[in-house]
Image (cartoon, rainbow, N blue to C red; front, top):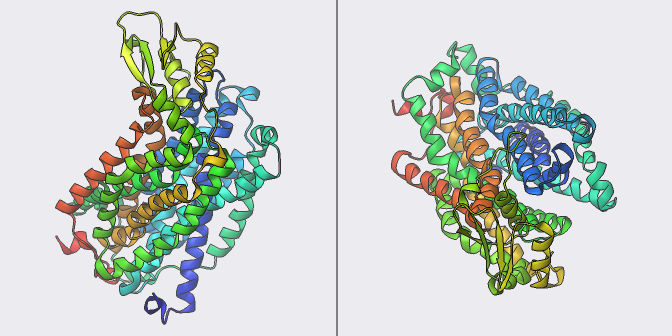
Length: 540
């Protein structure tokens, strides 16, 4: 890779550094919520059903993702009209302020339903800001890059999401290690949110030193800018076709692979396999440290062999191997849980009409006895079969040869205990090497699909609508397809009774992207973006 960086000027290096550092801090802000959701779920939502509270927290987490495309539209338009620099300066101020305020929020016990309403509002602000941030940072770096190294230079932006998550894990781990579990659960979780104000001030200072991109300045000087970026992006052919293809044939699959390999893997370790939080953070954190350089590797490689084939190869390999990889995690992380499940098949007998599929949980939700039973077993990390008993008023449990009549949490807990159910993963029985290897493999998948995606999207669209056009498919792919993964997967697992069933969601989306990308997209390597054109214009 030395040939790639040879001759890079001090200004070019500063552009990459300043853009990447600010974006790291912005991702740190955004992902704090995801990592800490299991801690404060019970503080901002009504007590009584742990999975319901967790689903509520994940729904709020998902709200930040769902609103990201709207942020892409709002800030993308401003970025194409006013400029890249000032737009992503605004986005980081909005993100940092919203994150800091989360750390100050009163809880449900203090102000009732106003607490989750305020939490959702701040989460929406975060999502809007991130919707404008990524497209601005990627476009800014790409428009400063030399054509033969655009994949390499923009791949530094691609490291920021993972490094932001890593930074969040480090700050949370340091906070947890310096206080007891009770204090952290009550108030200590606020500390990482409050620290964001320091990162915000530093980020603003760095970004104020940046200048507008030469490509954008040239376009404005020549009077070739778009007066209506939204119309030109989404209502004019062929650009609108390429926006749709970029979503379905690239970013949707990339999004689910990203969130499976990092977030869902973390939740699976903690919630399903019962690994303690600090151990899970260490495992995921180490995999991120080992895997992060591969963002640069695949970005650099995309300058040589093309972007699309690397992205689609990552989708294909992930879809084929997710089931054995997660089954391998169970085997190497919690062999006692695996042995218990094999020895004690579990059956829930109920009227299936009373078993509901819950996604967005709130005061409107009605949890039946069947729902609570499924919640109990899912929270225990156990797979189970549901046997339908039409019109039955009772929800019964069978654990091996033991039967329990009717739903009763205390009795069901006692039945599992009698069968020697392991409440937590035994650290002495974790195969650290194999566990870490599996986690690193999944991060490598992330780097394959994510490393080249910024250059690919930038090269698809012309300068005058680049910020708007690339931001929307990226944030729908990552914000909707990817961001919904923890919520949907958790709901699917609870409904099916299979702890691995949630993996079907990322697998199906990855396969869809593979097929559409192969059939309808072509590579963008070699496109000259300095002329203001992109693939959508060249192929017109």
